[in-house]
Image (tube, rainbow, N blue to C red; front, side):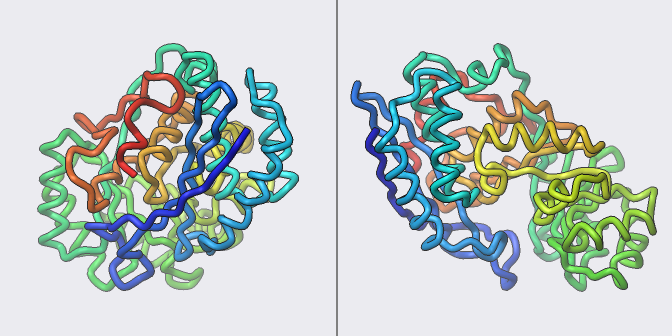
Length: 349
């Protein structure tokens, strides 16, 4: 197998957290595996240093080690050999963000070799569409209301709203008024609060009928303390999900899993199984992934069957001509049905 990596910087038309670490240019690394028979598999590394602390330089160094490991291995003809190839790459460098690119490329290659979509390789013949939430950034209340009305008209019934700013109440009130009483509203603080301030903030914002408080505090211990203090609030962990899984005990209501953080499709499916063993609900979201990452998350969702709406409707935040591949319809995304990860995805890059 011959593997190559290509770095891109893709413009964002709508950063989610202006002034708080959201980039204007999104780095993505496309990883390609070429087989001797002319087939190719493509994956994507999506590090986001402001979110996960992982630099592009660290990812490219790991991918070089993975490239060398793959050059010594036979081309995978089945899922067993695919798993063995991933294990060899993990031994060379365990960085999840880089392993995700290798994982995606190997699944894509195997899908093209067998003529099967990845979800079928995972044992799901006829996957259901994946329910999505719309994401509303840390914008003004009037802008939030306009975005909510637009998403509602497009068929969304769940809305994730960025909070952790002085005008949280006004923004959530605007979204609730625009979306109506039946809409699900999720408040994502990205760990903006600490143990002392979080209980008061959750109590104040609960009046808007919050479905889920996502990463209100950073870290498993702080989340567990918050959930104990407010047992009726649904607390989820996103940035801290990996640490929560490693702890081996249920600390809160739900975990948000991501292809990049887990280390690929196979790892995310395994993480979801482990999370449910511990008693968590699970759902899947994007780390501002490109189409290869979104497609991978959809195939993983087919196997996981998420418990809540997923945050995968993010491709429209890129500065790319419309329509984007994998466009949501009626608040849902269909799992790609073509061989591998799906057809036409690489043309976006």
